[in-house]
Length: 127
Image 1 (tube, rainbow, N blue to C red):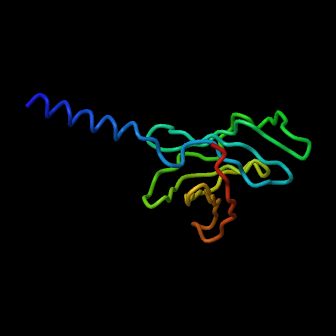
Image 2 (cartoon, rainbow, N blue to C red):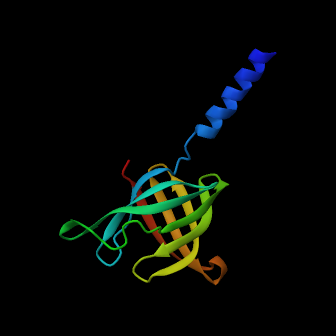
Image 3 (cartoon, rainbow, N blue to C red):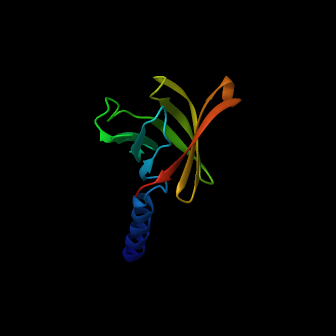
């Protein structure tokens, strides 16, 4: 009986330790000539993305946005879809956000008017 309980506990631990498929580093689309690498990781029971590197036409540079979160409290909805908030650095505004994962592409949308009007970007997985 103890062996069965031990095996069941190991199974639960393995499932809990499994990473969300969105976790990792993503490259944003250029926004006003610059783009970033965003590291997606758990933040509590949800997912957040933190800007870890920034680039412009001259190459990598130290943007004041490094360390900021453009992806905030994204909750998995199933089927590779997520809902939460997104911050747009060029406008310094937070919008209702959606993400849709398809392989090594992540489509993000920042929306207003209850999700009727959205601006979208497609990010590519870096690692």
